[in-house]
Amino acid sequence: MRYFRIRKIERIGPASNELPGFFICYTIYIFAEKDKATMSKYLSILFLCCLPAWLWAGENYRFRVYLKDKGDDGYRVEEPEAFLSKQAIERRAKNDIAVTDADFPISRSYIDMLSETGVIPVVQSKWFATVVVESPDSTVAEQLQQLAIVDSVKWIWKGNLRVPAEEKGEDRFVPEDEPLCNEYGYAHKQIKMLNGTKLHEAGFQGEGMRVAVIDAGFMNADRISAFDSLRLLGTHNVVFPGKSVFVGDDHGTKVLSCLAADIPGVMVGTAPKASYLLLKSEDSDSEYPVEEDYWTAAVEYADSAGVDVISSSLGYFAFDADELSYEQAALDGKTAMISQAAHLAADKGILVFCSAGNEGNGDWEKITFPSDAAGIFTVGAIDEDKKKSGFSSIGFTIDGRVKPDAVALGTSSCVIGPNGSVRYANGTSFATPILAGMGVCLWQSLPWLNNREMIELLHRSSSQYKHPDTELGYGIPDFYKAYKKERKNGKRAK
Image (cartoon, rainbow, N blue to C red):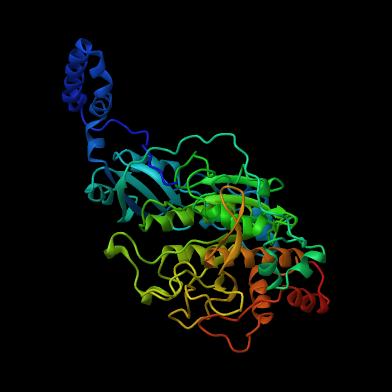
């Protein structure tokens, strides 16, 4: 369900701006007193007249403000516990990754300086030293540009204010599907295709691994019996701060089920015993570059929380404003902000899985952003016959890197819908968590490897490693083969 929202707003302009509305309301009231039936007829008019003047226009603007630096709030690299979780610090230490000033938050004083211009700070990035701000004034960029702390300003969104989704009830969702005779139920094919059942049988189902799922929303995931055993680390709504991730869009619910569903005989995901951080970064009502800022903020949140793996089934290239859309020449992993963010997450030691995109049958045809990023694992889709799904986006990147990295079942993938029952869905959105979950289990079994070594191992264990192509990349990974191959090397945990 899509929904609208209204932000808590500051008064803009003098109170006299609202006087006309007041007199209209009062007139309606006087006439309605004479005829009680008239009162209900005019209630909606009464409400609208009481709204602040600028809300009538409804359209707001968002700008990405690039700062010259992040200011100084006294953070020190020698004291990372002030801005990173214990797990994030341990991941850096394990992989010999230094804590740097890129990990420092933006100074509170800088945020206050921006707010003093009348804009509302929405989301920020410490890695890029950017702050997204909102205003009903389309010309506010000129004022922001005059601030000494500002390097540049870019318009990235316009739209209407929206009313939050209604509170959900207390219903529980239990699948009506008949259990099958195998452990994995209706999801058996998608796990077997990756030779994942043997890895599970060897005792590796993701236990102890921390996974962030970045998506558009996880409708009803907190009330679906398939997730009763979900090990939930937490949730965060980047788009609507403070709002639940369990209302609105159900795309993330289906994605999460590919990873974490656990109803033997009905559906078992590829990493049912991992721990999950659920992050909403997609605004389903529009498509603007601000989505890149949301996604970047979600990735930074996941990094600070200390996750090991990110699974993201979101991708972008065309926006509602054509002049903001990307050209294919930008598929170099360095141009799009979202692709740079994915690469930076990999540099922090996170194993990042991203969907290739569903543009294979369209004019674009190629992979979407951020799946062009270097250092991450991009997943395409195949059907039951191991042929490329028609919709699955193709590679390579503009600079010649192999993408997608590999493929998994994305045509008629088994998922759990928002009503708690099994359904089948198409998309690289589902191939990605299917493969990512097995990656989680494999990394659990080989803890001495770092994220880049994991990617190389998956490449070498895939069906067409020696002859990668633009459709399947290195092919279909064999996760048990990868496990045996690395174990045979006789390596031990550091």
